[in-house]
Amino acid sequence: MNQFLSRRYFILITTMSILKFFLKSKKALASSEDSQEEWNLTQEEWKNKLTPESYYILREEGTERAFSSNLNNEKRKGIFYCAGCNLPLFNSDTKFDSGTGWPSFWDSIQGSVETKVDFKLIVPRTEYHCSRCGGHQGHVFNDGPLPTGKRYCNNGLALKFRAE
Ligand SMILES: [Zn+2]
Image (cartoon, rainbow, N blue to C red; front, top):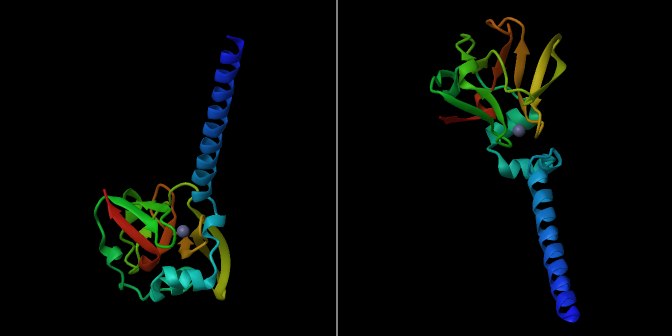
Protein backbone atom coordinates (compact mmCIF):
# COMPACT_ATOMS: atom_id res chain seq x y z
CA MET A 1 0.00 0.00 0.00
CA ASN A 2 2.76 2.40 0.97
CA GLN A 3 4.69 1.58 -2.13
CA PHE A 4 1.61 2.14 -4.27
CA LEU A 5 1.08 5.56 -2.72
CA SER A 6 4.66 6.71 -3.13
CA ARG A 7 4.58 5.66 -6.76
CA ARG A 8 1.46 7.68 -7.38
CA TYR A 9 3.04 10.57 -5.57
CA PHE A 10 6.11 10.29 -7.80
CA ILE A 11 3.97 10.37 -10.95
CA LEU A 12 2.04 13.36 -9.65
CA ILE A 13 5.21 15.34 -8.90
CA THR A 14 6.68 14.52 -12.31
CA THR A 15 3.48 15.55 -14.12
CA MET A 16 3.32 18.78 -12.17
CA SER A 17 6.89 19.76 -12.90
CA ILE A 18 6.42 19.08 -16.61
CA LEU A 19 3.26 21.19 -16.60
CA LYS A 20 5.03 23.94 -14.69
CA PHE A 21 7.85 23.95 -17.24
CA PHE A 22 5.42 24.35 -20.14
CA LEU A 23 3.43 27.08 -18.43
CA LYS A 24 6.61 28.96 -17.62
CA SER A 25 8.00 28.82 -21.16
CA LYS A 26 4.65 29.89 -22.61
CA LYS A 27 4.57 32.88 -20.30
CA ALA A 28 8.12 33.90 -21.25
CA LEU A 29 7.18 33.71 -24.93
CA ALA A 30 4.07 35.85 -24.47
CA SER A 31 5.90 38.61 -22.65
CA SER A 32 8.78 38.71 -25.14
CA GLU A 33 6.29 39.35 -27.95
CA ASP A 34 5.56 42.74 -26.46
CA SER A 35 9.09 43.70 -25.53
CA GLN A 36 11.17 46.36 -27.22
CA GLU A 37 14.08 43.93 -27.66
CA GLU A 38 11.93 41.89 -30.00
CA TRP A 39 11.85 44.94 -32.30
CA ASN A 40 15.49 45.84 -31.97
CA LEU A 41 16.20 44.82 -35.58
CA THR A 42 19.26 45.58 -37.66
CA GLN A 43 19.09 47.94 -40.63
CA GLU A 44 19.16 44.95 -42.95
CA GLU A 45 16.28 43.23 -41.14
CA TRP A 46 14.19 46.40 -41.34
CA LYS A 47 14.95 46.74 -45.05
CA ASN A 48 13.65 43.22 -45.63
CA LYS A 49 10.56 43.85 -43.57
CA LEU A 50 9.44 47.24 -44.93
CA THR A 51 8.79 48.77 -48.34
CA PRO A 52 11.55 51.22 -49.38
CA GLU A 53 9.13 54.14 -48.83
CA SER A 54 8.18 53.05 -45.32
CA TYR A 55 11.82 52.31 -44.50
CA TYR A 56 12.74 55.87 -45.46
CA ILE A 57 10.08 57.32 -43.11
CA LEU A 58 10.33 54.91 -40.19
CA ARG A 59 14.07 54.24 -40.05
CA GLU A 60 15.59 57.34 -41.67
CA GLU A 61 13.18 59.91 -40.24
CA GLY A 62 11.98 60.88 -43.71
CA THR A 63 8.83 62.82 -44.57
CA GLU A 64 6.39 61.89 -47.34
CA ARG A 65 5.00 64.46 -49.78
CA ALA A 66 1.93 66.32 -48.49
CA PHE A 67 -1.42 64.95 -49.78
CA SER A 68 0.32 61.77 -51.02
CA SER A 69 -1.22 59.36 -48.50
CA ASN A 70 -4.66 57.78 -48.83
CA LEU A 71 -4.86 57.84 -45.06
CA ASN A 72 -5.09 61.62 -45.22
CA ASN A 73 -8.72 61.21 -46.35
CA GLU A 74 -9.49 58.13 -44.27
CA LYS A 75 -12.71 58.86 -42.36
CA ARG A 76 -13.86 55.41 -41.24
CA LYS A 77 -13.91 54.28 -37.61
CA GLY A 78 -10.89 52.20 -36.71
CA ILE A 79 -7.33 52.08 -35.43
CA PHE A 80 -4.10 53.36 -36.96
CA TYR A 81 -1.20 50.98 -36.28
CA CYS A 82 2.57 51.44 -36.56
CA ALA A 83 3.60 50.17 -40.01
CA GLY A 84 6.78 48.80 -38.44
CA CYS A 85 5.50 46.68 -35.56
CA ASN A 86 1.67 46.93 -35.55
CA LEU A 87 1.41 48.71 -32.22
CA PRO A 88 -1.92 50.65 -32.06
CA LEU A 89 -0.96 54.36 -32.14
CA PHE A 90 -4.11 56.37 -32.92
CA ASN A 91 -7.84 55.95 -32.67
CA SER A 92 -9.97 57.34 -35.53
CA ASP A 93 -11.96 59.30 -32.90
CA THR A 94 -8.96 61.64 -32.51
CA LYS A 95 -8.36 62.19 -36.25
CA PHE A 96 -9.14 65.59 -37.74
CA ASP A 97 -8.62 67.43 -41.01
CA SER A 98 -5.72 69.80 -40.38
CA GLY A 99 -5.50 70.90 -44.02
CA THR A 100 -1.75 70.17 -44.01
CA GLY A 101 -1.94 67.11 -46.29
CA TRP A 102 -0.80 64.66 -43.61
CA PRO A 103 -3.01 62.45 -41.41
CA SER A 104 -3.48 64.44 -38.20
CA PHE A 105 -4.63 63.49 -34.72
CA TRP A 106 -5.23 65.48 -31.56
CA ASP A 107 -4.17 62.62 -29.30
CA SER A 108 -2.25 59.35 -29.39
CA ILE A 109 -3.16 56.09 -27.67
CA GLN A 110 -1.65 56.26 -24.19
CA GLY A 111 1.97 55.08 -24.01
CA SER A 112 2.20 54.36 -27.75
CA VAL A 113 4.53 57.19 -28.79
CA GLU A 114 7.60 58.89 -27.35
CA THR A 115 8.93 62.31 -28.26
CA LYS A 116 12.29 63.96 -28.82
CA VAL A 117 13.27 67.41 -30.05
CA ASP A 118 14.95 67.73 -33.47
CA PHE A 119 16.56 70.76 -35.10
CA LYS A 120 16.35 69.73 -38.76
CA LEU A 121 14.55 72.94 -39.73
CA ILE A 122 16.68 74.98 -37.32
CA VAL A 123 13.54 75.83 -35.32
CA PRO A 124 13.16 73.00 -32.79
CA ARG A 125 10.38 70.54 -33.61
CA THR A 126 9.15 67.70 -31.49
CA GLU A 127 9.57 64.43 -33.34
CA TYR A 128 7.69 61.40 -32.08
CA HIS A 129 8.25 57.72 -32.67
CA CYS A 130 6.62 54.40 -31.89
CA SER A 131 7.40 53.47 -28.28
CA ARG A 132 7.89 49.80 -29.20
CA CYS A 133 10.01 49.66 -32.38
CA GLY A 134 11.32 53.24 -32.33
CA GLY A 135 9.99 53.90 -35.85
CA HIS A 136 9.75 57.61 -36.72
CA GLN A 137 6.10 58.65 -37.20
CA GLY A 138 5.97 62.46 -37.46
CA HIS A 139 6.02 65.68 -35.44
CA VAL A 140 3.71 66.99 -32.75
CA PHE A 141 2.74 70.68 -32.57
CA ASN A 142 0.78 72.76 -30.08
CA ASP A 143 -1.74 74.20 -32.58
CA GLY A 144 -4.27 71.36 -32.57
CA PRO A 145 -7.93 71.38 -31.60
CA LEU A 146 -9.36 70.91 -28.12
CA PRO A 147 -9.42 69.02 -25.81
CA THR A 148 -5.61 68.54 -26.00
CA GLY A 149 -4.52 71.40 -28.28
CA LYS A 150 -2.03 68.95 -29.83
CA ARG A 151 -1.55 68.18 -33.51
CA TYR A 152 0.18 64.90 -34.25
CA CYS A 153 1.22 65.32 -37.88
CA ASN A 154 1.86 61.77 -39.06
CA ASN A 155 3.32 60.21 -42.19
CA GLY A 156 0.70 57.94 -43.77
CA LEU A 157 3.45 55.54 -44.87
CA ALA A 158 4.35 54.95 -41.23
CA LEU A 159 0.79 53.82 -40.43
CA LYS A 160 -1.52 50.96 -41.25
CA PHE A 161 -5.25 51.47 -40.85
CA ARG A 162 -7.74 48.81 -39.93
CA ALA A 163 -11.43 49.75 -39.99
CA GLU A 164 -13.58 48.52 -37.08
ZN1 LIG B 1 6.34 50.37 -34.05
